[in-house]
Image (cartoon, rainbow, N blue to C red):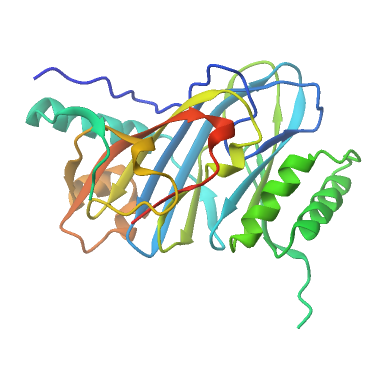
Length: 292
């Protein structure tokens, strides 16, 4: 059986360079941010999610960048393991080669409260990460301005479009945002993977945060769940494609991929691992990926 082209590193490949993934705001507005590769893996057990992210990024000239990641609940944040992506895709390819799994198709899986507070702040490699609990858009903007001032950046880099987008997230019930400040240069750098674990009643991946950018994109996500999912209340199901039929993996195989994901899904005899692809123009992403 011929092996299908599952890459050892998953990627977002944009046909137009743009400020993609997580809402990227360069401190220098004249600098272009290039993000040729984003790796993402999601493990979800029905109540809790692990989101593992890593990117290859560079800029047209040296700059600092503020990235914004909205999340449905307060996350635990830690350094991830880049090898998880390689091990997962190697396992998929081995099972496809051995078992003759078919190639891709359209998915058919069947009091006055303060405006914000920092609940976590840590330097992880090149990342300066802050987790902030916010309740309104004005609080978000005020916090960003104060945060930048604290590190010596006086410019207000939050655009009106990004401000409106954050306001939309808050209206949808989002109160948690991860702010990640990184320094970029002209050379491509693979940032250390960051792993987020948080409560969620749906499998979640943020897409709407990228809608202030322009350009078409192809997003590939490694998805790991105990069963197949068939309810997609936000992003239309026809926007999501399977790169291959799901493969079953055992607890022993999962333990070899990632210890935290193993702990998250411990107790399930078999899990389903597959790659989802989402294609479209970034400015058209007016909803996040939710599934259950």
